[in-house]
Length: 370
Figure 1 (cartoon, one colour):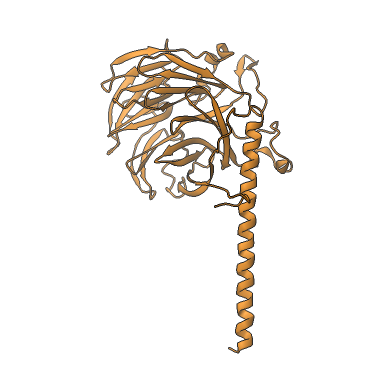
Figure 2 (tube, helix red, strand yellow):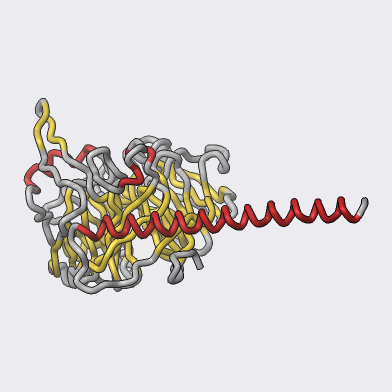
């Protein structure tokens, strides 16, 4: 090859690399600007009293999906991560599954039914040690399974359990609207320790007509080992309970950047707008995940030409246990479940059934990704 040919080839390579770098820079700036715009929109309706640097997240990789897992599951109703294993409940097949982080199926159990080890409305799950606890809505019980084998161990009777979590001492906290009290604490052997609390959100009298509308109507998370935060699909409202005494510590809401709607009765059926689709512990604070955008939400001019159902973002409010609003952030992909494990955020999409791992990012003074 002649010297002139080599020089020409080098020029092409350098130009291509330069265009690629410029494309990456433009992409980084676009991501940065979009995430900042989301945060500004979310916080504009009721700005936090103290300005705090909220995190920003972008998808890192997809750990699980029905396709890559050969359709052993179809959707993620709930998931937990423990000891390098991912446990999930599949609301479509009514099964409970365990995977490695490499996507290997470790075990699968359950199916539709009412007998031991079967599910009639599988819901949220919690893990501690070698035990998984699973909400079994329609049959009115919480089922215990062995984390290592998937074998059914035992059950606790409780009407329509919506959510649950383990306390540090091994006791189990279950949230249910159908019991006399909202929060019930059980020993590992299933004996009731105490129950307390009630759902006191404005307009809550309509809520009891909606209990069977889905498996996600109540959500809870444990914060700082002794504070249980509870919220609902249908309310911009959160209640905090002391898990040692059952005492109501706090209750709060904020003015959201999108319109709130009251319950209405249509042909004898109560219909409510969905506001919060999940709640999770964010260190010592509370993360409330809001539902995906709707066509009536005035988000940003950049989305004017995009149908609302194609806006693939999720939105989170952060609160402390004093009921103070800390701030908000958004991140790509419309997920219906969030979880922080070992400081890393994970999200599960509703429609596609993907489990996504996120990377926390920062911006420099020029709003470029660092």
